[in-house]
Image 1 (cartoon, rainbow, N blue to C red):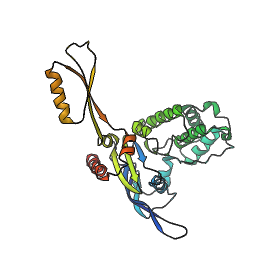
Image 2: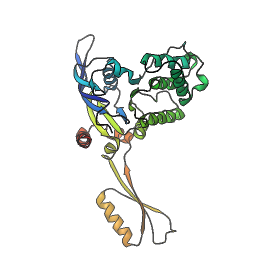
Image 3: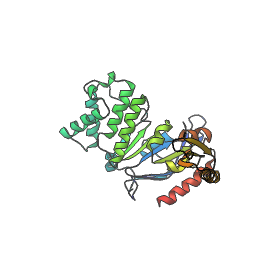
Image 4: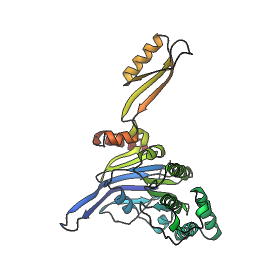
Length: 312
Protein backbone atom coordinates (compact mmCIF):
# COMPACT_ATOMS: atom_id res chain seq x y z
CA UNK A 1 0.00 0.00 0.00
CA UNK A 2 1.32 3.45 -0.95
CA UNK A 3 2.33 5.62 2.01
CA UNK A 4 0.57 8.65 0.46
CA UNK A 5 -3.23 8.45 0.48
CA UNK A 6 -5.14 9.10 -2.72
CA UNK A 7 -7.67 10.91 -0.55
CA UNK A 8 -7.30 12.20 2.99
CA UNK A 9 -10.20 13.78 4.87
CA UNK A 10 -9.66 15.48 8.23
CA UNK A 11 -12.18 17.17 10.51
CA UNK A 12 -14.92 17.55 7.89
CA UNK A 13 -17.94 19.45 9.23
CA UNK A 14 -21.08 20.66 7.50
CA UNK A 15 -24.20 22.39 8.85
CA UNK A 16 -27.43 23.10 6.98
CA UNK A 17 -29.98 25.77 7.88
CA UNK A 18 -33.66 24.82 7.76
CA UNK A 19 -35.75 27.05 5.45
CA UNK A 20 -38.50 28.22 7.82
CA UNK A 21 -37.27 28.31 11.40
CA UNK A 22 -33.66 28.93 10.32
CA UNK A 23 -32.36 26.25 12.62
CA UNK A 24 -28.81 25.01 12.20
CA UNK A 25 -28.80 21.24 11.62
CA UNK A 26 -25.40 19.53 11.75
CA UNK A 27 -25.08 17.08 8.84
CA UNK A 28 -21.40 16.22 9.39
CA UNK A 29 -19.82 16.62 12.82
CA UNK A 30 -16.24 15.42 12.37
CA UNK A 31 -15.40 13.06 9.53
CA UNK A 32 -11.87 11.62 9.20
CA UNK A 33 -10.71 8.88 6.83
CA UNK A 34 -8.12 7.95 4.22
CA UNK A 35 -8.26 6.10 0.88
CA UNK A 36 -5.27 4.32 -0.69
CA UNK A 37 -4.42 3.25 -4.24
CA UNK A 38 -5.48 -0.28 -5.18
CA UNK A 39 -7.90 -0.61 -2.26
CA UNK A 40 -11.68 -0.92 -2.25
CA UNK A 41 -13.22 1.09 0.59
CA UNK A 42 -16.90 0.84 1.47
CA UNK A 43 -18.79 3.87 2.74
CA UNK A 44 -21.66 2.69 4.93
CA UNK A 45 -24.42 4.19 7.02
CA UNK A 46 -28.19 4.41 7.25
CA UNK A 47 -30.26 6.91 5.29
CA UNK A 48 -29.51 10.38 6.61
CA UNK A 49 -26.17 9.34 8.11
CA UNK A 50 -24.23 11.86 6.02
CA UNK A 51 -22.89 9.76 3.17
CA UNK A 52 -24.25 11.85 0.30
CA UNK A 53 -23.27 15.11 2.01
CA UNK A 54 -19.73 13.79 2.46
CA UNK A 55 -19.45 12.80 -1.20
CA UNK A 56 -20.78 16.21 -2.28
CA UNK A 57 -18.13 17.90 -0.15
CA UNK A 58 -15.42 15.70 -1.66
CA UNK A 59 -16.43 16.78 -5.16
CA UNK A 60 -17.09 20.44 -4.30
CA UNK A 61 -20.79 20.04 -5.04
CA UNK A 62 -21.21 21.33 -1.49
CA UNK A 63 -18.70 23.19 0.65
CA UNK A 64 -17.88 22.14 4.22
CA UNK A 65 -17.86 24.57 7.14
CA UNK A 66 -14.56 23.17 8.37
CA UNK A 67 -12.06 20.46 7.60
CA UNK A 68 -9.36 19.61 5.10
CA UNK A 69 -9.58 17.46 1.96
CA UNK A 70 -6.37 16.35 0.25
CA UNK A 71 -6.20 14.58 -3.13
CA UNK A 72 -3.01 12.88 -4.29
CA UNK A 73 -1.01 14.73 -1.64
CA UNK A 74 -2.32 18.20 -2.59
CA UNK A 75 -4.92 20.23 -0.73
CA UNK A 76 -8.16 20.94 -2.52
CA UNK A 77 -9.67 19.67 -5.75
CA UNK A 78 -7.53 21.05 -8.56
CA UNK A 79 -8.28 20.66 -12.28
CA UNK A 80 -5.48 18.10 -12.44
CA UNK A 81 -7.06 16.09 -9.63
CA UNK A 82 -10.52 16.28 -11.23
CA UNK A 83 -9.13 14.69 -14.41
CA UNK A 84 -7.91 11.75 -12.32
CA UNK A 85 -11.27 11.09 -10.63
CA UNK A 86 -14.27 9.09 -11.90
CA UNK A 87 -17.71 9.55 -10.35
CA UNK A 88 -21.07 7.80 -10.56
CA UNK A 89 -23.76 9.69 -8.59
CA UNK A 90 -26.66 7.90 -6.95
CA UNK A 91 -29.09 9.54 -9.39
CA UNK A 92 -27.12 10.16 -12.58
CA UNK A 93 -28.47 12.23 -15.45
CA UNK A 94 -28.36 10.68 -18.92
CA UNK A 95 -28.57 12.48 -22.25
CA UNK A 96 -31.25 10.19 -23.67
CA UNK A 97 -30.74 11.25 -27.30
CA UNK A 98 -27.14 9.97 -27.26
CA UNK A 99 -26.25 6.38 -28.02
CA UNK A 100 -24.28 4.39 -25.49
CA UNK A 101 -21.09 4.82 -27.51
CA UNK A 102 -21.64 8.56 -27.98
CA UNK A 103 -22.36 8.98 -24.27
CA UNK A 104 -19.06 7.37 -23.26
CA UNK A 105 -17.09 9.32 -25.86
CA UNK A 106 -18.66 12.59 -24.67
CA UNK A 107 -17.60 12.01 -21.06
CA UNK A 108 -14.21 10.74 -22.13
CA UNK A 109 -13.57 14.02 -23.97
CA UNK A 110 -14.50 16.05 -20.88
CA UNK A 111 -11.61 14.52 -18.91
CA UNK A 112 -9.04 15.56 -21.51
CA UNK A 113 -7.10 12.34 -20.96
CA UNK A 114 -8.22 10.47 -24.11
CA UNK A 115 -8.82 11.59 -27.68
CA UNK A 116 -9.78 10.29 -31.12
CA UNK A 117 -9.32 6.64 -31.94
CA UNK A 118 -7.91 5.85 -28.49
CA UNK A 119 -11.08 7.17 -26.85
CA UNK A 120 -13.33 5.21 -29.22
CA UNK A 121 -11.40 1.99 -28.50
CA UNK A 122 -11.72 2.62 -24.78
CA UNK A 123 -15.47 3.25 -25.11
CA UNK A 124 -15.99 0.06 -27.13
CA UNK A 125 -13.88 -1.90 -24.64
CA UNK A 126 -16.02 -0.68 -21.73
CA UNK A 127 -19.28 -1.35 -23.56
CA UNK A 128 -18.15 -4.94 -23.91
CA UNK A 129 -16.97 -5.11 -20.30
CA UNK A 130 -20.36 -3.99 -18.95
CA UNK A 131 -22.10 -6.28 -21.49
CA UNK A 132 -23.71 -3.50 -23.49
CA UNK A 133 -21.84 -3.98 -26.78
CA UNK A 134 -25.12 -5.03 -28.39
CA UNK A 135 -26.69 -1.70 -27.36
CA UNK A 136 -23.82 0.69 -28.13
CA UNK A 137 -25.59 2.14 -31.17
CA UNK A 138 -28.96 2.52 -29.44
CA UNK A 139 -30.14 5.80 -27.86
CA UNK A 140 -30.11 5.77 -24.06
CA UNK A 141 -33.87 6.45 -24.00
CA UNK A 142 -34.33 2.78 -24.91
CA UNK A 143 -32.14 1.46 -22.09
CA UNK A 144 -33.63 -0.30 -19.07
CA UNK A 145 -32.81 0.87 -15.53
CA UNK A 146 -30.16 -1.82 -15.14
CA UNK A 147 -28.60 -0.95 -18.51
CA UNK A 148 -28.44 2.73 -17.53
CA UNK A 149 -26.70 1.80 -14.28
CA UNK A 150 -24.09 -0.20 -16.19
CA UNK A 151 -23.46 2.56 -18.75
CA UNK A 152 -23.10 4.94 -15.79
CA UNK A 153 -20.36 2.75 -14.31
CA UNK A 154 -18.63 2.66 -17.70
CA UNK A 155 -18.84 6.49 -17.78
CA UNK A 156 -17.06 6.68 -14.41
CA UNK A 157 -14.21 4.54 -15.80
CA UNK A 158 -13.95 5.87 -19.35
CA UNK A 159 -10.88 8.08 -18.75
CA UNK A 160 -8.92 5.46 -16.77
CA UNK A 161 -9.14 7.35 -13.46
CA UNK A 162 -6.79 6.85 -10.53
CA UNK A 163 -9.65 7.24 -8.05
CA UNK A 164 -13.30 6.25 -8.52
CA UNK A 165 -16.25 7.31 -6.35
CA UNK A 166 -19.37 5.18 -6.85
CA UNK A 167 -22.56 6.18 -5.03
CA UNK A 168 -24.84 3.12 -4.79
CA UNK A 169 -23.41 1.40 -7.92
CA UNK A 170 -25.56 -1.74 -7.49
CA UNK A 171 -28.88 0.13 -7.65
CA UNK A 172 -31.31 -1.35 -10.20
CA UNK A 173 -29.17 -4.38 -11.00
CA UNK A 174 -30.36 -7.98 -10.98
CA UNK A 175 -28.16 -10.66 -9.31
CA UNK A 176 -26.21 -11.27 -12.54
CA UNK A 177 -25.64 -7.54 -12.94
CA UNK A 178 -24.46 -7.17 -9.37
CA UNK A 179 -22.00 -10.02 -9.88
CA UNK A 180 -20.62 -8.36 -13.01
CA UNK A 181 -20.25 -4.99 -11.28
CA UNK A 182 -18.44 -6.60 -8.34
CA UNK A 183 -16.01 -8.22 -10.78
CA UNK A 184 -15.43 -4.89 -12.56
CA UNK A 185 -14.73 -3.14 -9.25
CA UNK A 186 -12.25 -5.87 -8.28
CA UNK A 187 -10.48 -5.58 -11.64
CA UNK A 188 -10.26 -1.80 -11.38
CA UNK A 189 -8.69 -2.04 -7.90
CA UNK A 190 -6.26 -4.74 -9.05
CA UNK A 191 -5.03 -2.30 -11.69
CA UNK A 192 -4.08 0.13 -8.90
CA UNK A 193 -7.13 2.39 -8.87
CA UNK A 194 -8.59 3.44 -5.52
CA UNK A 195 -12.32 2.66 -5.28
CA UNK A 196 -14.65 4.35 -2.79
CA UNK A 197 -18.28 3.29 -2.94
CA UNK A 198 -21.37 3.70 -0.83
CA UNK A 199 -23.96 0.95 -0.66
CA UNK A 200 -26.94 -0.30 1.27
CA UNK A 201 -26.24 -3.83 0.00
CA UNK A 202 -24.07 -5.02 2.87
CA UNK A 203 -23.23 -8.48 1.45
CA UNK A 204 -21.65 -6.74 -1.54
CA UNK A 205 -19.62 -4.48 0.73
CA UNK A 206 -18.49 -7.46 2.81
CA UNK A 207 -17.33 -9.34 -0.29
CA UNK A 208 -15.57 -6.42 -1.94
CA UNK A 209 -14.14 -4.09 0.67
CA UNK A 210 -10.78 -4.37 2.32
CA UNK A 211 -11.61 -1.31 4.39
CA UNK A 212 -14.79 0.35 5.66
CA UNK A 213 -15.77 3.89 6.59
CA UNK A 214 -18.98 3.94 8.64
CA UNK A 215 -20.93 7.02 9.65
CA UNK A 216 -23.97 7.48 11.85
CA UNK A 217 -25.89 10.74 12.30
CA UNK A 218 -23.03 12.70 10.81
CA UNK A 219 -20.34 11.17 13.01
CA UNK A 220 -17.61 8.64 12.36
CA UNK A 221 -18.36 5.28 13.89
CA UNK A 222 -15.61 3.20 12.35
CA UNK A 223 -12.68 3.40 9.97
CA UNK A 224 -10.55 0.33 9.48
CA UNK A 225 -10.27 -3.15 8.04
CA UNK A 226 -13.43 -5.08 7.21
CA UNK A 227 -12.20 -8.26 8.86
CA UNK A 228 -11.14 -6.38 11.99
CA UNK A 229 -14.70 -5.12 12.36
CA UNK A 230 -16.29 -8.51 11.73
CA UNK A 231 -13.98 -10.12 14.27
CA UNK A 232 -15.40 -7.84 16.97
CA UNK A 233 -18.66 -9.78 17.00
CA UNK A 234 -17.61 -13.35 17.58
CA UNK A 235 -20.05 -16.25 17.28
CA UNK A 236 -17.65 -18.92 18.43
CA UNK A 237 -16.05 -21.89 16.70
CA UNK A 238 -17.08 -25.24 15.25
CA UNK A 239 -14.84 -28.30 15.64
CA UNK A 240 -15.13 -30.86 12.84
CA UNK A 241 -13.85 -34.28 13.91
CA UNK A 242 -14.09 -38.04 13.42
CA UNK A 243 -13.73 -40.98 15.79
CA UNK A 244 -10.75 -43.35 15.58
CA UNK A 245 -12.15 -44.89 12.40
CA UNK A 246 -11.45 -42.27 9.72
CA UNK A 247 -14.27 -43.70 7.63
CA UNK A 248 -16.75 -42.75 10.32
CA UNK A 249 -19.20 -39.87 9.97
CA UNK A 250 -17.78 -36.36 10.28
CA UNK A 251 -19.09 -34.74 13.45
CA UNK A 252 -19.44 -31.05 14.28
CA UNK A 253 -19.16 -29.57 17.77
CA UNK A 254 -19.95 -25.86 18.30
CA UNK A 255 -18.18 -24.04 21.15
CA UNK A 256 -18.71 -20.51 22.41
CA UNK A 257 -15.26 -19.25 23.39
CA UNK A 258 -11.53 -19.97 23.30
CA UNK A 259 -11.46 -21.67 26.70
CA UNK A 260 -14.22 -24.09 25.72
CA UNK A 261 -12.51 -24.63 22.36
CA UNK A 262 -9.28 -25.82 23.95
CA UNK A 263 -11.10 -28.00 26.47
CA UNK A 264 -13.26 -29.63 23.79
CA UNK A 265 -10.26 -30.31 21.53
CA UNK A 266 -8.42 -31.95 24.47
CA UNK A 267 -11.49 -34.08 25.25
CA UNK A 268 -11.86 -35.25 21.63
CA UNK A 269 -8.17 -36.16 21.36
CA UNK A 270 -8.15 -38.02 24.68
CA UNK A 271 -11.05 -40.09 23.37
CA UNK A 272 -9.01 -40.95 20.28
CA UNK A 273 -10.83 -38.60 17.95
CA UNK A 274 -9.18 -36.99 14.92
CA UNK A 275 -9.59 -33.22 14.48
CA UNK A 276 -10.36 -32.49 10.82
CA UNK A 277 -10.93 -28.74 10.98
CA UNK A 278 -11.73 -25.84 13.29
CA UNK A 279 -13.91 -23.12 11.76
CA UNK A 280 -14.16 -19.67 13.23
CA UNK A 281 -17.75 -18.44 13.13
CA UNK A 282 -18.15 -14.68 13.00
CA UNK A 283 -21.08 -12.43 12.33
CA UNK A 284 -21.71 -11.08 8.85
CA UNK A 285 -21.61 -7.36 8.19
CA UNK A 286 -25.38 -7.44 7.80
CA UNK A 287 -25.79 -9.11 11.20
CA UNK A 288 -23.65 -6.43 12.82
CA UNK A 289 -25.89 -3.72 11.40
CA UNK A 290 -29.08 -5.52 12.41
CA UNK A 291 -28.10 -6.76 15.88
CA UNK A 292 -25.90 -3.98 17.14
CA UNK A 293 -27.17 -1.04 15.15
CA UNK A 294 -23.80 0.49 16.03
CA UNK A 295 -25.13 1.59 19.41
CA UNK A 296 -22.04 0.14 21.06
CA UNK A 297 -19.79 2.88 19.71
CA UNK A 298 -17.12 2.23 22.34
CA UNK A 299 -16.41 -1.20 20.84
CA UNK A 300 -16.12 0.13 17.31
CA UNK A 301 -14.16 3.26 18.15
CA UNK A 302 -11.69 1.14 20.11
CA UNK A 303 -11.13 -0.96 17.01
CA UNK A 304 -10.82 2.23 14.95
CA UNK A 305 -7.92 3.36 17.15
CA UNK A 306 -6.24 -0.02 16.71
CA UNK A 307 -6.64 0.20 12.93
CA UNK A 308 -5.01 3.64 12.86
CA UNK A 309 -2.08 2.31 14.90
CA UNK A 310 -1.58 -0.59 12.46
CA UNK A 311 -1.72 1.83 9.51
CA UNK A 312 1.01 3.98 11.02
